[in-house]
Amino acid sequence: MKTIILGPPGTGKTYALLELVEKCIQSGINTRNIGYFTFTKDAASVAKKRAMEKFNLEEDEFPFFRTLHSLAYNRAGLKKERVVTTPDYKEFGAKNGLTIKRAAHSNADGLFDSDNAYLTLINKARVSMVDVMTIYDRNEHLVDVERDVLYLLDQEYNKFKKSKGMYDYNDMLQMFVDKELSPKFDVLFIDEAQDLSPLQWAMVRAMWDNSDKTYIAGDDDQAIFKWAGADVDHFIALKNEVDDVQTLKKSFRVPSGPIFELAQSIRSRITNKYNKEYKPKDGQSGELSYHSSVTDVDMSEGEWLVLASAHHFFEEVEEHCEANGWYYRKSRGKNAAPVELVQAIQRWEHWRKGTALEPILVKNIYNYLGNNVTMGYRKANTLDKEKTYTIEDCIAEHGLKTNAVWYEAFNELDHFTETYIRSMLARGENILEVPRIIFKSIHAAKGGEAKNILLLPDVTQASVDSAENDPDEAHRLFYVAVTRAEETLHIVEPKSYERSYAYV
Image (cartoon, rainbow, N blue to C red; front, side, top):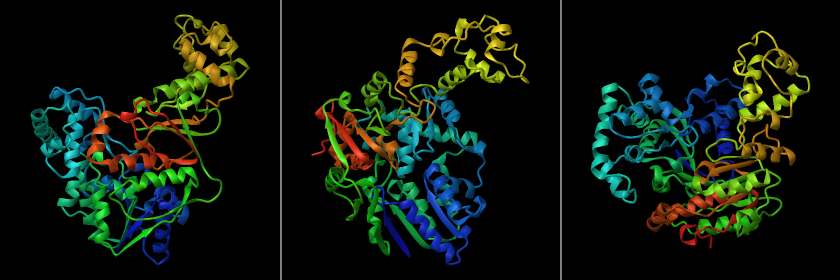
């Protein structure tokens, strides 16, 4: 018995799957005979945590709530030291004249992330189960990649792994398939199936052939990782192989009115898809606004998610936040005001008011004081690790020269940082908590949501070129973006209409 469960945005797909898990357990199926897999570590962890809480069971009672890579790793009997990691990729690059600063599989989205185009294409060939030359011919717009060099590097990469006796993530999955390592499951669950690559599909098929019942969950309209090798066409074609296709009918996120209508308009432009309908959430209609400039958008209150198709489109919005003293988190995950600095400011102000601090906290503060600490004392080496110190203690005996307010005492700060933090504090931003304004690429935001969404419609030239061959990819991307909004959606006029997504 094989069933597809389609989960449109905000319809509670994970909750629905866990309800099915509960029914399995209530029917007498042992949790150790239930497989629940996704290809992101975060998603697998969330599902396991919810299951443990819901059923009041321990972690070891859910041995097969994990990622596909984790399952393959364990079934193949591999050791950590035999798995290719970032330092190994850097070593390979150094031996072959490549500069590689970043190369790893991400826990956030399960995808291979690298700053080197050659490694990216080699990985894509493996997950797509084709040779690297085929991938090159499909990606001719990647002008910084030479065909002959790519071919040779692919050969050298395989030699490199063999010489070190190492395996990468794709090797694990291939071993799982080739050596028929699938466990026997009473019930198998596969989540976010629209984002599986051909290699991952091969692994899933090996598992469902060894399972009594299988549920494949996903949403083809939210398939936005084709560029990384995901095969949504395979997911859509499964309708001809399964026994049943079910659709979750009610969104608990997307509001009625213009936001829902825009989402449906975008979705209607997708040509290859499942036919499905769902309703928006009950309650107040959402608000949709269009703006000629990011400076017209008031983000002074509430939680916001700022979305764009690429990181470099955020610059103007970041400047807008800084000019207004709004606290935000950058798209690469760093807060606009460094956490260590914010903590040091808080501790300094408490210190000035009489609090005694441990030496390690004093040392952290000293890092920002510059010449307000006498030379020879700046590393706080004269402090006893077993004691605590008031600010008066440190002024008297440990080189501290001032007890002034932080923006006068912290003379290692640049003018911009000082001004920005003072501006945030003046308007009451809570800079000790998670920033209320979060910047994310649309790809990174899939699965997320916020009461207020600011969406930038600009796209790269590569995206324009790609959309000419497959317009569905762009429609799906911006459908995902629009459906992150719980209450309001703000769309800014693009910098260039030739390089932007057209909503109408």
